[in-house]
Figure 1 (cartoon, rainbow, N blue to C red):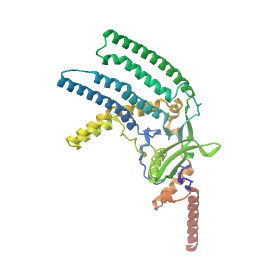
Figure 2: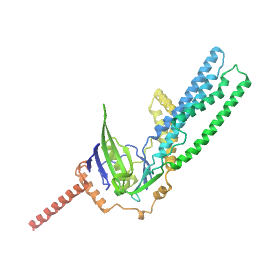
Figure 3: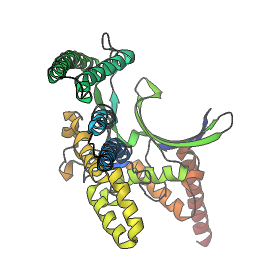
Figure 4: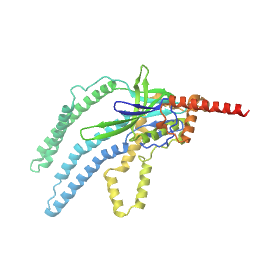
Length: 419
């Protein structure tokens, strides 16, 4: 059924998850995990995030190596060895580049935890949709972006204070040792105070944060639709097409209690993505494509072996340099860990109980009405009709029943005449 909204147009797919006649394809890599009993839908390019954070490690290594090479070249030419520059670059990377890399890494972990999967259980014919309960707005006392910035600068200044004596070759050993000792003591006090404060504050914040819960809803009643919107700006018009799965609120069917969406790019792609999900629930895991292997370490190794066969020496060396710069081998290991361990670690234990396999005699069956409707639609598709042009299911079914009655009537009349 089509419906026009203020922002664009909408193609309804459910309730009543009927066959659309489209080819099942996981075009947008929404299928993350698949078993005999359940299917996980989880969006996000986890590999890119891992590569971006590891890029800071490569940058740190490159800058330190460049500083060492420069020092060696100067030492060979002038006969004077000054290791102050490599030490300065090394400390700078330890205090700036690597912390940013770690920050991006933990942001990636946080994003995985905060985007839990939608799980579909074909044996129960139910959908588990994640949502976050409303938490209290909690702010760390005496802490904001400005305070964090000044704290970071203060720690850098203290470390610089402890390292500066090594740059001054004219000062006495006793003076150097006293400055270093003062700097290290002050640094230890700062780290102890900051660490204790953040440990207590973050534990308090965790108690007030929203909690992850899963809403269980019948598959046959799940709301699903493809919405196409046109965003018009001063000099640009963009079209966005989104596939949405939603559980309506009991007291307000027009609002969603929990929902999940993915950008599908085009209505045809959205139908293929929906058909991928629908066929898993109606026909089984064999009818649904397997999760993409692009983010697995085995797939990366296979691509490297194939590239060595297909590429000549220079392009292959260029690829290896890019692989090293983005640390793709390590990035695939981190991504696999996020997919197989981290993403499932934060899920409620009740979801594991709900996902446990059932004896086949306890499997839920589709309604007779849905089976008849799918049979009628399959025959209609064989006659050349398309799901997107058939109108509302109730209206189309009424027309089908009317034509069926007319056909039966003509048959009885012809039989009467022949008799």
